[in-house]
Image (cartoon, rainbow, N blue to C red; front, side, top):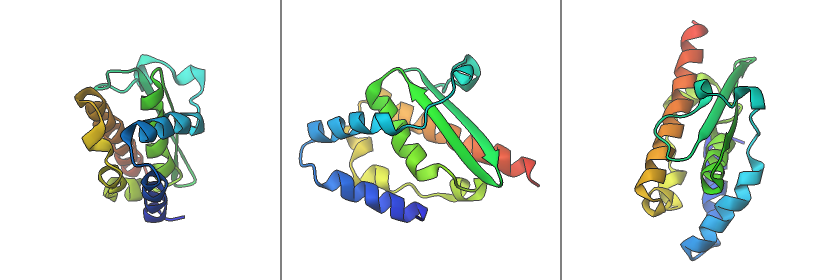
Length: 140
C-alpha cells in the first residue's frame, strides 16, 4: 500500500466512531500493534525528548527502507506511535522526509490531544524524520 492509501485507511477506520472516547479506546487497541522495540534499545539514547510519557523509538535501514520499532509507558501514546509507524514503516528516507501526514488532522487527533500529548506527537514525528534525514545523508 502507498503512504496515502494507509492514511486513507486510518481516516476510514476512525470515521466509524462518533465520540472521542471511542477514538481513544481505538488508539489504546492499536497500541498492541506497535512493532515492539527490543529491550536493548530502551535506553536514553532512543528516548524521545519532548514527550511527557517515556517513548522509545528505534530505526534501522535495511535495503533502502527504514524499519521502525517503538514503545511507550503510556498506552495512548503507544497507540499514537503505532499509527505513525503504520504509515512510515518500510519507507525510503526520501518518502519520510517529504511526507504530508494529513491523517492526523483528518481524524481530529491533534485537536483532541492534551497539549502535552500533542507536543509528544510532534516530537515523535520529528524524531522519525530526523532518522530519515540521517539515513538519507549516509546513503549519498
